[in-house]
Length: 229
Ligand code: GEK
Image (cartoon, rainbow, N blue to C red; front, side, top):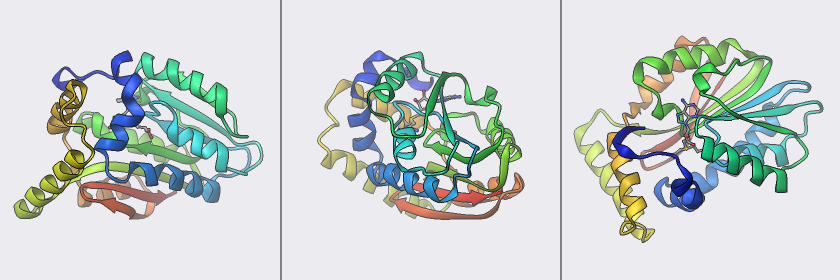
């Protein structure tokens, strides 16, 4: 991982707190992913949560989805995350079963998918790999299926970019988290992340053959999109 930041045991311990305090809107996006999944999940299909961390989105979907015979595959490339995720979900998953896998999402075979969630994870891939992953996801989706993609985005206009950055820093400061060492490493990671513009995301979804791509949520530079097969 870039800038010496790793999703290791130290990060896993504080992860729910860290992500809620660094990503404005995260705590609203997660339960809404549950509702979106309830609407688009199809009977006897697979729901994928790629880059699942501790399984927040999987848990929301497991509790919300009603489609009979649906199951969730949750994937993360961090062993520490996967271990904790399995323990959390064993204690309090909903009705839809969740299979948690230690895997690079680039290697995940997407098949018979009705819902695919990438909740703040595409941004960690090299830019050159992002289109290939979205193509792979789109190819494995059923007709009528939905892809939910949440990302930190950037802005073409320099003035807007500077304002958005200032607003995000204000948010983090207001969370009172900036003094902790782990938060500083996290900030370093966020500084080197290479976000894409909204136009780039929408074009990528379109190029993969998905339709109706649009933003359904934004808080400062954190946005979530949906697109359909
Ligand atoms: C949530 N979705 O709480 N393959 C699989 N996992 C990866 C890869 C990869 N190539 N690269 C990074 N990850 C979650 C939050 S966090 C977002 C996602 C953040 C994983 C990485 O190990 C980490 O667990 C996750 O993506 C990113 O709804 O920390 O900003």
